[in-house]
Image (cartoon, rainbow, N blue to C red; front, side, top):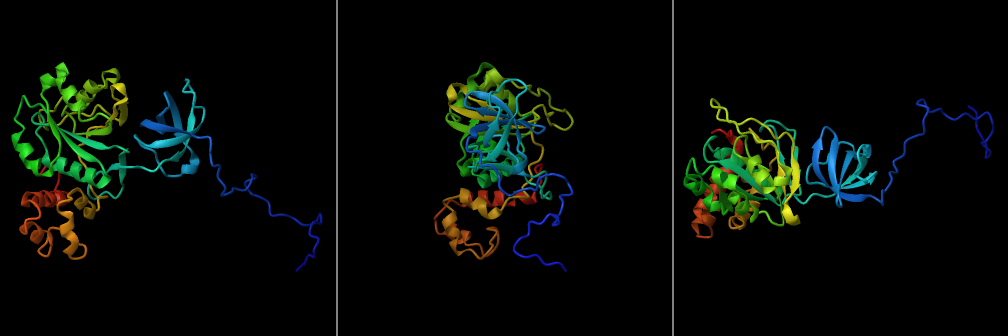
Amino acid sequence: MRRYGKHTDEDDIRARPNRKGNRPRTNIRPKHEDAAEGLVLTVDRGRLTCLVEDRVVMAMKARELGRKAAVVGDRVMLVGDLSGMKDTLARIVRIQDRASVLRRTADDDDPYERVVVANADQLAIVTALADPEPRPRLIDRCLVAAYDGGLEPLLVLTKSDLAAPDELLELYGHLDIPYVVTSREELENGDAADRVRQLLDGRITAFVGHSGVGKTTLVNALVPEERRRTTGHVNAVTGRGRHTTTSALALPLAGDDGWVIDTPGVRSFGLAHIDPSRVIHAFPDLEPGTADCPRACSHDEPDCALDAWVAAGHADPARLYSLRRLLATRERTEGD
């Protein structure tokens, strides 16, 4: 074997060639210190519409982000052409830490988690009181996802001219969830939008609900400058509406007093990603009672310490019932 001395720059020393014929890759990535912050308004087939200051900018995700995806509501850092002019494209190089996330899976057996919305303060669960009939199990699942993701829930009950809200409100009364009841006439004359807007001012609110409940109609009333096509049709056989909103979209309320995020209608809301131990955080009156629970307690078993906590008068028994109903929602289908 040939050995070299101190001087190894002879002409006959060969370097191993790069078979691809390009420069070797490096782990050093640019810091993009000049990147501008933007808000993701919508995502469509790999193209992201972002608001940068007062400009709407089209962007795509930089390769260096790998599999990390930006969703509506994300705060992102962008470089490139930020003029917002036609046929220009910027790059998203960083996704800022999220304050909250609304996530779901296709069903309870699907391990693939989908982030629907990021950084929302509030989740407005829109439910019709009739046509289509309300689905309490779907409401329960949305509540669990809200509590798990750090969003405050809001119930928006529509079509009160077709059915009374009393029974549904009684079911959720002990959860202390704010609510608003609207009718079709109020949606048409703007009264419903005015009452709902009072609960949205200064906040980022994501709207969810299954098709046909009037969700997009309400969003159109809240943001008339950005009207989206509404369904207006409920199948007479299945009692379900037809999807017309196909992608989530963030829209500003008038006067810069908040944002609404319209999301596609859902027919299922899987909770495979939910850790049941986090749901208890939404019940501050019950959470101290879990200190004496056995390890990995499901809070619905004979040794659960919450029964003694409630029996001692520290919390309302109806609150414990509500907690257990929500925790058990993963074991039931939405239509039960």
